[in-house]
Length: 339
Image 1 (tube, helix red, strand yellow):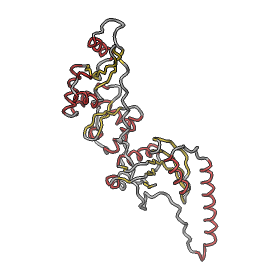
Image 2 (cartoon, rainbow, N blue to C red):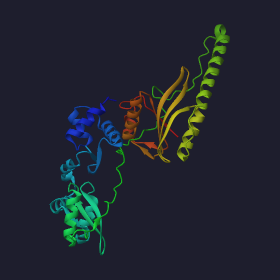
Image 3 (cartoon, rainbow, N blue to C red):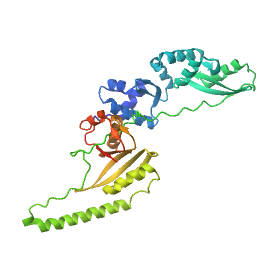
């Protein structure tokens, strides 16, 4: 998997955004769109970039939060009806909701990047207005006062705070970006460290000595595992966590670090896995999800790379065909297990 500089991706978005992952790839001249989507999702979760509601195909645009006016450029990607509403609102600056046709009222609620809802406390009750997203609040308030015939000081309605819009999920992935990992039980370089029995060698000459060494090694590994288990963090009160913890206990895996990302569905861990050559640290992404895609795998791989750790992906569901195909290429070395 190609190593991409996150700062370089951030600079491109700040200079050229709004951009979709494929455009970032074209500008950089390198990278995989799935990986770039995961990086953009990570930057979004840190507040360094923002994600548009408007999409090109299935991909949102990423842009500099300090330059929201740059979103105007993606108005051309709206559907025909929404683009007409976009142009009308941009021209009029402020629209009163109950004076619009039904289709326009629906469309105003669809173009969330460009239409800001204001609920106004007028003498006759609350009235909903929409302002174009780049129009300053003071200018919008003055236009609303004029529209309601309240120009005298102290008699103007006070626009209530705009109805809060839910923050976009981190990528999705992409969701995406926020992508998930495939499950795979195949042997080879991607298999989880197990506990293979030591070779007994030639029992005629070395059997006794090797048995003693094996017993000593097993004792040392057992003691190390017990010490790791004793130092584990306090359990998280969550159904999915309890299921994952039972799996770890069965496998003799100790938890070094843990974090609940989403209740009942997503967890992050740093694990201590016993192997024939000692304890090995792994980054682990655990997800309760019916289908994990290549974006999920890319996100987990990216998190592991940032910690310089190998990656284990645990899932309760399946992985997509596309994700499986990438297990031996883009996601080589990533271990997938089904709970």
